[in-house]
Amino acid sequence: MPKHRIEPKQKQSRMERFAGILPREDFPLSPHLPTNRWYKTVRGIRHYFGSLDDPDGALAEWLRHKDAIHATGQKLDETEGFTVAQVCARFMAVKSEDLACGAISARTIQDWQGTCELVVRSFGKSTPAACVTTERFAALGSALKKRYGPVRRANEIGRVKGVFRFAFEEGIIPTLPRYGKRFQRPGKDVVRRHRAKQPARIFTASEVRRLIDRAGDIRLQAAILLGVNGGFGASDCSTLQEDHIDWNHGFYDHARAKTGVPRRFKLWPETVEALRQVVGERPIPAAREHAGLVFITNRGLPVVRVTRTSRTDYFSVQFTTLRRSLKIGPEGAGLYTLRRLTETIGGRAKDQAALDYVMGHSSGHISEQYREWLHDDSEDARLQDIADVIHDWVWPEGGEHGGDADE
Image 1: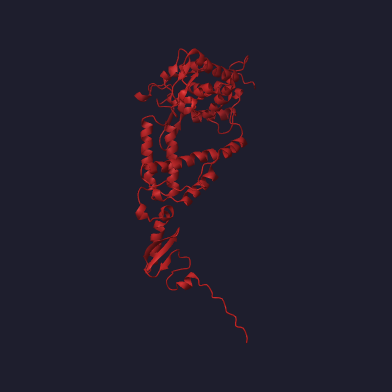
Image 2: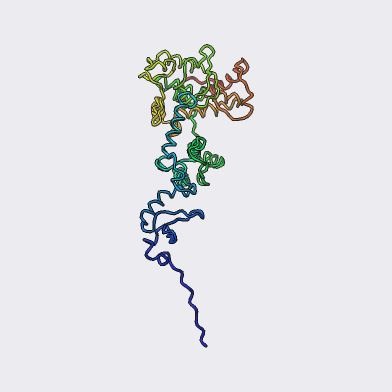
């Protein structure tokens, strides 16, 4: 007898199985006939949306709840709370209070504002903060990787996580988000390799001398001297008060505005002389609270003014114009770049603890909790040694102030 071949049963497509029900092949929802509803299975759990008679309405409902379900396993209505924009607004209100009481610097609040704008732009201002998915964080991580180097990327990721940690600690979101592996700070090894590939961002001694001699504006000259002498940046100059300086003995002594870390260093005679001239020629302050500032613009305002959305830096344009006119230094270098010289050359004194004190650095080591600076002759001599090492590098023995000779 001839053998009859049994044809395998053909698997039906979704359109064939639910002919007349599915509106199109790529419709993301499936029909649940017993309850006459549409559903979507996420992580093994069914979520129902609308009636089979209204596929467009069910699809719109699914899209509205999609991010919340992927992030929390629940529909939006069950987790609805503060939006991303509301969280950022509340976060910045708290940071503004910190600024008002001096807990953070103006530059820091500007950084936080930029991060909050990034969060709103990336996740959507009306997105519930509890419903930002791992995929959305991954997309932001990829965008940051394309745009920034590892150091800037690490800072941005840290601040983004800080905003959501604030929301969690304030009870705005029930749990911390699942950031995923693609939204992690670059490792220290990645940062080290990146920095090793970058050219040295440092001025030579002859370049420093030319910057000082050609500054023109005594305020800029004093700022450059402070930048090399004690690692001052523009913000440090902006907050410098007359009573922060021991004019008789030539010392700066005040906690660093950015971090609150104690700071003291010996001022060079050239630095003291320039500061005295700045104070002597200082314009009338525009407001009473600016009266004690060493550096004032011609309009009587602080040399650095920062809001949530803008930063006005009196020295930035001046220094860049000067550097470019002299055709020296690494491209993009600003006044803050001089701080690298203080740390690098000051290290030749081989007294890191004293150099940290000059820079206003905190290593986080337990020894810092027990170390007390007594401001006696022996400890001030250590600060004098660091000042001398840097001074002798800028103006080598036998060299004259104002010389342009290469070292």
